[in-house]
Image (cartoon, rainbow, N blue to C red):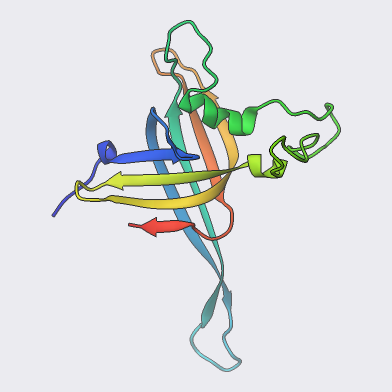
Length: 165
C-alpha cells in the first residue's frame, strides 16, 4: 500500500510546469433532479449537470533577484486573470473587449481559458486530470514572515479533457 504526499504532485498551465505550487485541489459536483413518480415512496433522482471546480496556491518568485520576470511560471498564471484590458474603463465591456482577434487569427476569448493539468507521480506512472479552465478568482497575499503567494480558484469549461487517477 502506498500513500502520496505533496512531493508527488505537480501542476501544469498551458503545458508548462508551475515551479512553485504549494497545493492544488479539485472538486466534482453532480447536480440532480428528482423524477419520483406520483405515489412512489422512495425518491428517484437523475444526474443533470456536472461542475468541476478547483483551487491552487502558487508562490511568487523571481529567477533573478531585483528583476521583473513576466515569463516566470507564477507570473504567467497571475497574468491570465489580472492582465491589463484594452477596453476603456467603466464601460462594462467583457474581459476580451478590444482583442476580438489575435494577430495569429485565434479568438481573443481563447486567451481567457487555460489548459490545466493536475498530476501525481506514483513512482511508476503519472496520474493526472486535465481540464480547460477559466480562472474565476485570484487573491494575492503578502504577510510578514510569509512567502508572497496567490490563491487561485478555477472552473472547468465543458467536460474533463483527460483523467487517469
